[in-house]
Amino acid sequence: MARSVRDLALAYALPAGPDGADGYSTAPREFDAGLGTSPDRPVRVGWLVDSGLGPTDAEVAATVRAAADALRTAGVQVDAVEIPALERDNPLELWTKMNVMEVKPAFRQVTAGHEDQMFTYSKTLAGMPDTSVEDYVRAEQGIERLRDGFAEYFQRYDVLLLPVTTIPAHEHQLGQFTLDGRTVDAFHVSSTTVPFNLTGLPALSMRFGTNSDGMPIGVQLAADWHSESTILHIASLLETLSPVRDLHPAL
Image (cartoon, rainbow, N blue to C red):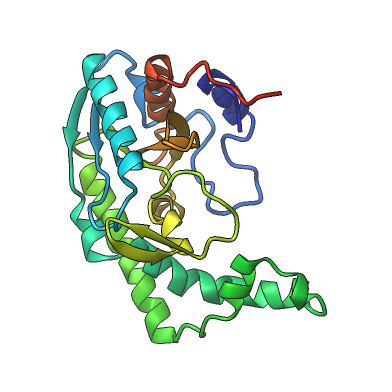
């Protein structure tokens, strides 16, 4: 969305706060549960690569560890962590159960007569079996357990550092990947972002490395609800430490 964290903060300032149309936008614009209320206090960062989310590319994992080490060197308290809630309820499975039933009616409506032009992703979702009412309710309960698990985590830490995707940037139309000797389908790349789609936690992604093929690798920062100022603070610090800060796309 932006070339720098500063620009991202400026852009975020525009849509922040309720818009009068979304019932889920409950916090007033000036409300800040993050570092904006106490910018000088020490920040606690936990980092993970797996914790139940499944296998991750070795170069992606190394990039997350490098980001954690960089923050530690800069004086931030950084610990390797696990989040039991992610091991108990697989976020990608919960998302699939919920999302299939929520998007299929919309897909059918907008693609009627043009099914042959649908993207592979849309065709895959549309072709999945319907979620039963029982499974839908179980998925909702699982999401609530995820929220509880993150709430417990953010009692101890301000930020969670983890991969953006489980693999680096890849070629189009790849349906499967092999990671740590395990074959996973293309949906697995979303394993590390889906938890925040489900729970409504704020998250930010930024490039912090490059793989052996020259493709970018990003890391992700997540924080407690309504704590965007915390993410922007840590992202700004991490940006100054980034080994790829001065790399830009070729013109």
